[in-house]
Length: 290
Ligand code: SAM
Image (tube, rainbow, N blue to C red; front, top):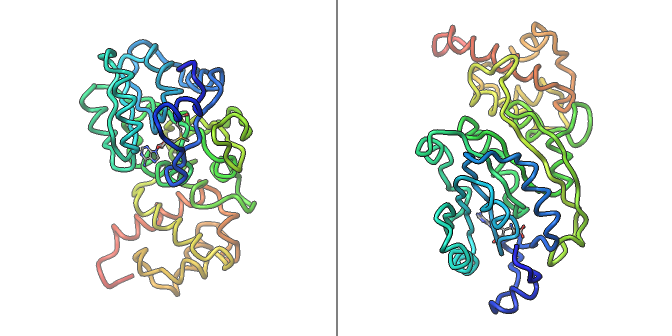
């Protein structure tokens, strides 16, 4: 990390932090090192950094990774970093939106799964998490700093207010660990909220969803009507699931799920069992027979 504070560096570059890009730069080198340490880098690891900004994480990562691809949407910061790292052949700075980046293609190119790291711009946390889930096969682990409130939603157990689409789908795909939290004073400019670092590791599913896309649709449908019972939420979108509304309560009962339960009380394993039942029905039912 540069010995200059983010504020001084930005001043020298004639730049101001862009709120719209979620720019809250890490001001403490020791916190940057903690985040990088959580990746547990081996010398052959290929790393993708999300939003390198002024390079707080990029510098320690560049010391350890076999190859580092850093994706920065702000063109002026990407140009600054490209100059900073021009003599590092193992570091590639790309001016790109991470949400359009093809992790799978990079993993294929380098012949190994990737480690992903970032102090995330808060507005893209959820879409990025869903993207990582979709490209899970390309990812070995991710260490991500996010709003504490989103970390709580990610890790939530069934039954509480925090438990929702993000909890079910991300817990299905990843083993999650909350590592440590940092208050606003660790960043420039300070954000309004506390940040939490979460480590994600792809995990084998037990039981596995036969059709992950169907699981995704089912969970979105269930939580789309949070205040309704599970049966009513699902009945509202039954055709989307290849089902008639009238069959929903019976089907839930047959799976041992009380139709009067609320979506936030249903466990990940129960959603998977339900999705698998629907997938099996779809496979066995000719069109028009649902
Ligand atoms: N890593 C730096 C640090 O810790 O000091 C900066 C972190 S700052 C919270 C988030 C960074 O992500 C900013 O540099 C911002 O410009 C960049 N960014 C915002 N949206 C992005 C996107 N969609 N794709 C890539 N980078 C993005």
